[in-house]
Length: 387
Image (cartoon, rainbow, N blue to C red):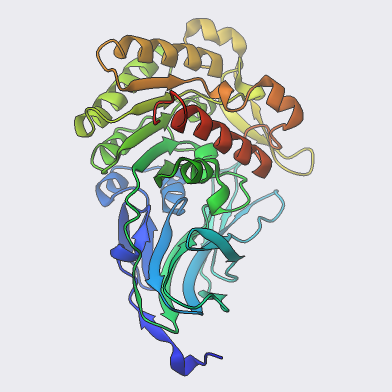
């Protein structure tokens, strides 16, 4: 039985983490970021700042003989005014690649967000402790996947045996960018977001740049992708551009070209897969902006645009799918490693009958699994872009 006298405290450093592009030293510890400091300095959107600090796909990777470990963290919990309380973020433990436990950390900061007014209030709180015991003996590889939807400052790591960085698995690195659906939205946990599931099935290392509300063709995100080492790259574009009512068709096409051009500066020959939006009935033919609706007791999202405005260049998901298909087809004439995937092959009309989107926009846990399995089959197997 371990006692506190047995604990070894190991400094948390970059070589113990995977999936983060930057680490910020804070007053309490270390905050993983999924955008580098230069990109964050060029962003003035609070939603993106929050999303990129939520460590979707970020995990501690250790090699140790320890049978017990503790991780002190300072989480930031989100509360949405008028919506039901959100569950605490989930940490998932893998031992030699197999699920071995899960837990949450209570306490932490509380961020209250009013979606109708845009106001945000932060109330500071205490750090908490995640604890795993009765781990198998002997040397083993341990991964602790951090909550995909909860900003998490890493304060301290304690084990009852020495720790070293996890071994390089020698797998290809898959760099993916997308919206809240790629971020993880309503997945059951960090290893079961659709990109994490697809990466596991495809045998690759994931770097997930899925940002809730933040897949808006930002040049600083393209530069971050350009400068991040990767063997395989995908960009899932469209839903945020529509629901933010960000641009018209005239601007969308050149913005996509510019984004892809920038990514190609750093990865001229890597397989690059452009994925259009999954089916989302509320925005298939109705432009944004999107608005929350609390009338049913929970939160649902509704599109508030006028379909007649498509004639003047307003974007819908169908318009975007057609444009992305055209852009990839024309660019592929000179770029044999550029590929396109219609998002409705991941989640389409028949799926919406069996697995409707609970809030009108985001997939639930079962749908994340469906999308992840289909992406693995379509991208990593057979004649897929990443096969």
